[in-house]
Length: 338
Image (tube, rainbow, N blue to C red):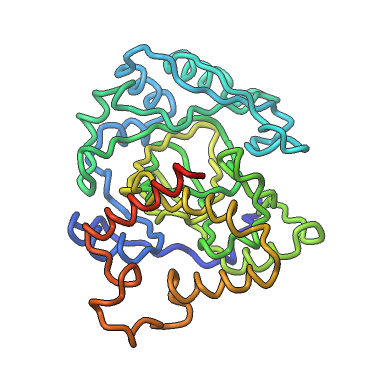
């Protein structure tokens, strides 16, 4: 089958860096990158490179027996994990089964005509397979950042993004990631925000430009990453990604981290508050607040505080910890009155 993304820009590839270089140069650059050789010493990777049966046997051997979230879509979906037509729900069902039973079923349906598409997603390995964490250490991240398991068939997950940095490590099968920069959100035709995760309605593999004309701009800005067993992909937070598992059996491990603040300083909560406060204002008021955000929050208008002495800048200044604490307290009091 012809690759629909063969002509797109490819994500850059590097050899495994030191932890210092990874955080100082790669994470700070906020650009996706493929890392070769990062998991080369993992026994899990050796099993994944051997065969689907060896990979399954490895995971069954460290399974502690707990139930896991299993998603399943009928053959008619073509493996597309997305919305139902009316967006009232998703195109797959979800239930709890054991890891071992699910792996056995995945093996049993390999090569079977009209087989359903099955996937285990986001399984925390520290609780379900702690031996995996001990035997397959991640040198780039703190031990407090624990891995999650993704295993299944030839599933296609619609374009979505994460609020944390993501390091995805392929152990078995092959995966293709189509990545869109965060600023392409308006061109992706994203579904309801209050039905997480919000997914793009546009299918990159069969784009309908009559229905989604702005999606052409998103595709023009897209990059593609092809991952084999042993390859890892760093995706900065908020990058949109469409993920295709290219083999009948696929296994990946990922790590999420990002030090997202809680409460009043959480960006997503601030965004939801902004929807409530600004979205339904009259046009003139919306223009005013857009200008205020551009000037004072995002700096789109350049430095608009240089004329104010540093000691007099107040909330427009560096916001040292005591001032941040005072501002949080003032906001809490306001919220209590609302």
